[in-house]
Length: 251
Image (cartoon, rainbow, N blue to C red; front, top):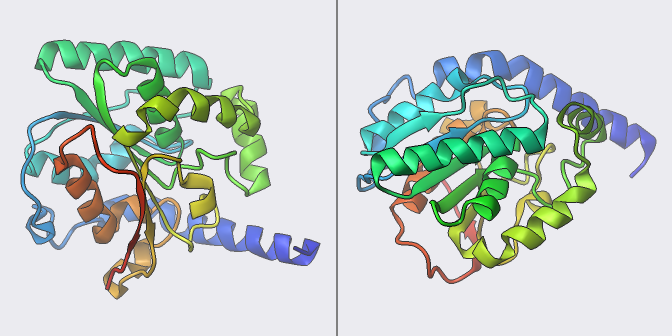
């Protein structure tokens, strides 16, 4: 790839994310906030929602309302997501155990972007209380290929992209509990950076017209197509799911 193409791709990412991110969570599901359109059976397990790098937990409230509507007790991270990775995961591990103790049920974790990496680390740390991880647009394999963002994240989180190899080895025994969701249109977290061996790896093949305004890295988790996949995944009995790569023909 030429330097010109690299610069062009970077500018596209900056423009797309900067122009859409402040408004996406405000407009998500505004036409059908009760979530009836997705038509997935209700669940009863506690779900912890972990957001992306530099995100606030309230950003994911629209998704939480959909999950609650479908019977899940929804919990959020309690901090702006820019803390050092390892201490943050340790604190989240303590929180997950408290949630499991209080609810009397294992926890499912839905993570977006960095939240998916944190969710995978939690699964490796707390496999006794985490039954499932759904990672949306999470560059678990080597980090994001968008180098300026990767360097910023490494500096603020105190980790390096190469350390994801360690994470992948640790999570490998529990990969059957994972579902990853990614889109070729996502320049921050393309499918090659998101697919985990042994997991169910869902790659969006198309973006329906109704989801076009959400088709960015920060918006993908609010796409109705993606929400339907999340709900379907949360309703799936685990463990014991056969690993595969699913190519979703959305339309």
